[in-house]
Each structure stands twice: as C-alpha cells, then as structure tokens.
Length: 235
Image (cartoon, rainbow, N blue to C red; front, side, top):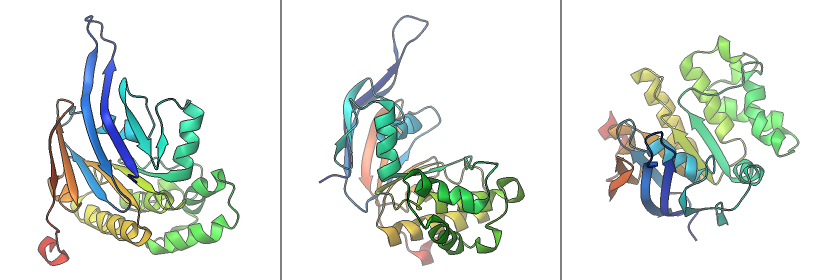
C-alpha cells in the first residue's frame, strides 16, 4: 500500500482578473514506506503548495490525497490535524520553534499532544542524538540557527512519524551548518524508516533522495530515479 498517494491534484485560487489562478495542475505520484522523495523547482513553481496539500495543511481544488491510507479530501480541518498529529512530522525553513519553551519542551510538544507519558526522557534522548543534550534548557533565542534546526529535527521525529515533510530545511543555514543538518536528517530518517518528502531548490540536496519530482509553473516536468550519492562522493 502506498503511504502517500496523490492523484490528479489541482489547486486554484480566486483572481481579481476574473479567471481563477491555477498554481498546481493535475499532479500524481505515489510513495511507499521508507522512500525518500524530493520536490524541486524555481520559486513560484508550486512545490510548497504541493507539500501543503500532501500534508493536509490545505485542501485541493480537485484531485485526491491518501496519507497512510487515509483519504484527506472530505475531512474537516480538525480531522486533518488529528491525522497529522498521528502520522506526520514537519521541518520548516524558519524552524517554527515555540519561543517561550525550552529546547526540551519544544521536542516534547508532539508527544504531549498525543497524551504520551514519559515524553521528557525520549525527548532528551532525541536531543542527545542531534548533539544538543547540554542545550536542553536553553530557549530558541539562545540557540544558533543550526542548533534551532537540530531541535526541530528532534521534534519532527518525536512522534515516530510515518511521513516527514521538510520544506527548504537548510534555506536559512550557512553551507557548513547545512551539511551537518542534512546528514542528521538522512541518518534519523534511515534509522526510523520514515518516508521523507523534501521540498528544496538545492539540486545537490535533492540528489541525495531516491527520487526527484521537478515542477515548473505548477506542472510536473519530470519524475526521475536518482543514482545513490556516496559519502565519499559528497566529500
């Protein structure tokens, strides 16, 4: 069974010029558990819109999305939020950490929303895994950009998601910090067996996934299998 299936997905918005503005045209693809998948394209190509529809953050104008076997089309906003909380992790370009919570508390949020006990211990273990065990009680403003993104990585894996959506995860990081975060992302993803959907304009980053979907003007240009990139090749 596909863990993410997108069928003929289209998204349009009302326009002051009369005809609706269509930003995504009839996109279809399917992913199985453990796949790594990149969506690439220039600014305004529709890639972030596509990610939002796949994650149930928005509703398509037409077409269908199945997330871990659940059809999202007719679910209410609250029902889609419940599906995300159960099955999905997120990493964003601007980190989206809660500023009034410590690093540890930020990582605990997904688990607490699910009513899980013992979240502090597992959250602390995840912070240790991303190299921030000694920064657990620091607030986001006390952390560098790379440290904040590592906290968001730990948070994304806290609820053991079936799918992880990453939207330009290195967009606000310098090259050296980006390399560290990306290596951690792929290591954690491999260890957890999570399906990764990555939106990026970075073709080198996209090449580290198994498959790349290229979009332009809201239309799929191609859908290709990538050759494995070795650690030696990246070095």
